[in-house]
Image 1 (cartoon, helix red, strand yellow):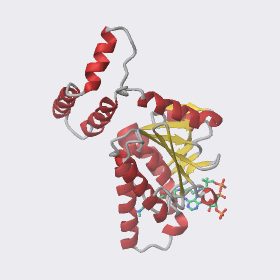
Image 2: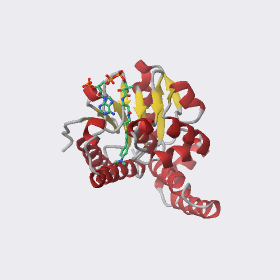
Image 3: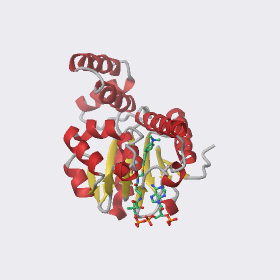
Length: 261
Ligand code: DAK
């Protein structure tokens, strides 16, 4: 079921670690890899053994160096549209995953690679990471949502600069503009991502799920509607055992036990 050509998937202690594994092409995304990401995330959404997902790239050089340029070069306009639609579906699928998704960006995150990282909830990046949307160098524009998600995350001016110049930025600059949550030495990156995943797993699972939904969907609404939506989800938390346990544990001055044991 989880046997893929271009992805390595490991599920341990509730954490699914997905490694994009095409090191010879710096983990560039071709149709096959996008299709595999789509199937893996369909599986994770349903599998109770998976509570948090980490996406990373194979090797020490690249997270994902973009959509596969060799595969895209001969495409007709209609084929390019189909390819872009597949990319959009995959990014949306990851973004809408009911479980948190952490990108462990271990090197180049360019074009479709930057867009993949943008589709994740949190970006932890290694000190050698470099981000960019270099599509204008190739005579195209970002095709997997980059113009939209980058401007929503870092603001219009910085997104314009990155997309119009095609310049790359290093990990420190990515951190400064809010594209990276944290910068970590490369050797410790995956451990740091796993530690963050484990911390999230130790919290109330329904609360984590509803909090992701509230932030993600709320950003698409005006503030009054978004606050109303938050109130509905807040109310829903009180239908769960975990709210009773979490609040009782506080009052009894002990750690909460959300595992139900
Ligand atoms: N695709 C395919 N192969 C790639 C690749 C990519 N994006 N990036 C690197 N490779 C391959 C190289 O061709 C090379 O292969 P061999 O020659 O060894 O066979 C191998 O990976 C190692 O790369 P380099 O030899 O170039 O390594 P360097 O250290 O010298 O340079 C680099 C690293 C990351 C700076 C360089 O490889 C580079 O500039 N790569 C391309 C980065 C890039 O431009 N990425 C953006 C891709 S465009 C759309 C849909 C989607 C998109 C756009 C439109 N529609 C359908 C509308 C998205 C577009 C993109 O993502």
